[in-house]
Length: 455
Ligand code: TYD
Ligand code: MG
Image 1 (tube, rainbow, N blue to C red):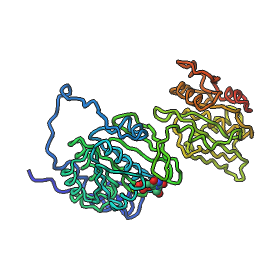
Image 2: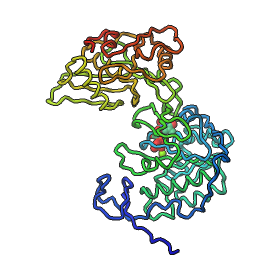
Image 3: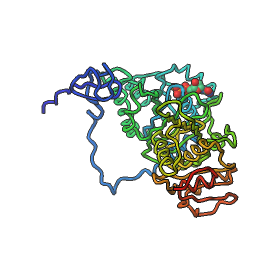
Image 4: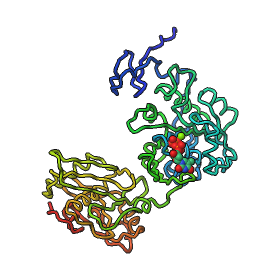
């Protein structure tokens, strides 16, 4: 059979959009002059066919994980690295990706596992300097300054490492792909090639990928569906607290968090995040409410702050940091309609202390409490934690793992808990705390002695 003619494609170097036709402006992301000629993604084109296996005869590997020895990294990965997995660690430049993976490399090599660290971005001397700062001994750690994928695979062949780290995937290029290094098709083809290697040899590969806030650098987003695990550093590099979240995990729970603090000697695991996130809180100020959120399997106490002020503009401003703006708009509408609060002419600012991003519905009630507290300029009672999902009718809905949240609050010294009535009774009591179940937002405001008429 005659070979199929090579399909010409135009690929957007920004977002990865593909089209046989050329456009001056990418129809997908709208970027000008971003479409370049390239080949259709070539991964898989010359690999031998694999026979089908009978389901019943396939041996589950039992997922023997490699523990990295770094408690927060292991937690984020759901217990450790699964052999043969491809893991992507993304985050903005300077946030700590290279630091974290060099620390992981050190701790793996201390267990006697040979680790290959491929440095495409910095020289091996630069990595060594960082290593000195981190007091890396690197007994079985190998550094390779190389960006050509074929040559890296050759080195892997001769070195036979247990774990491979690629810093960063944006700098890698494959000779088999025509497009320029850093383009989406290069990044995707290199990742696909590394995936084949990882699965074939059972060697895990960790990829570092840069992400900028506006997504200007192509790459990691296009890899999310190829890799097994996606970890992202949350927030910006300006904070000392660093949060790594698993947004995808084929081998474990997603949404698990690892929390670190950047020190002069690298990233330190934070065993008690509640203490860290509440450390700078001032007691008894209006507009502040402490809540307990479940991040993966872990309860974390955080402070939600609200500032409600008379707007000087015809359209009131609504700004949020750390919570979804649409969620806040919805809660504000609910407060207007159900409790008759007048918020139309007020600017509302919501902030989550410590740079944490809250995505879980259990924090609704704290947002509401903070808003009403700021509006009336009255602080919440001392030693109080509120959590619960708020519905459009002002009803409070049950949340997951209420007891874990209550326990965490009690451990951190809080005594009064306002929680959904539907989440009570707890399946096992927690001593030393007073629990107050509320069924509506009105009941909640009454419980924390804030003005508001019940729905
Ligand atoms: P880095 O890991 O190089 O970031 P990335 O690989 O994500 O681009 O470094 C992150 C920042 O951390 C850098 O600005 C320097 C700082 N840093 C420390 O504060 N302490 C340390 O021990 C190290 C190694 C870095
Ligand atoms: Mg780096």
